[in-house]
Length: 160
Image (cartoon, rainbow, N blue to C red; front, side, top):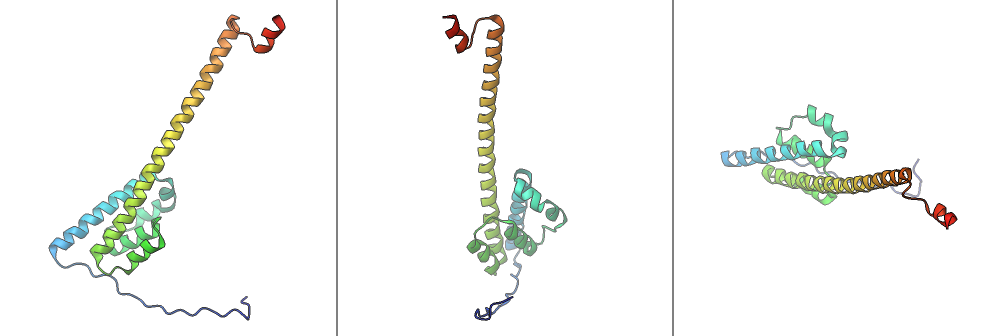
């Protein structure tokens, strides 16, 4: 239900042509190299990032990642890039430049995932150190109590 006093938005949409694949062999090799790099980074993201794995693993299995246009749309759609970065991908008409923008996006996501993984491992390492120390202290206290070497503070006060 729309309030009568609120005007409806009117927009004008301009459809852009898809980027044209380069014709020269050297540029085609560059496109293929960027595609390989993007796919490699995507594989790393799927292996390391729970977020990517849960949301995109099935899509990635069924998707033709050799088509540069579809790959650019897929990665831009998956990326945690800013709106401006994603818009730049959509607006770029040169396929090689578009793929390089996508490569940059996926590299940022990989870097973020690496940092996230490193921090997680450090936190888990600290937690396990603390847990191990607590367990050893409890065992030491129990051993000393069984040997009669240690009394808790209340017992020591009563005996004095």
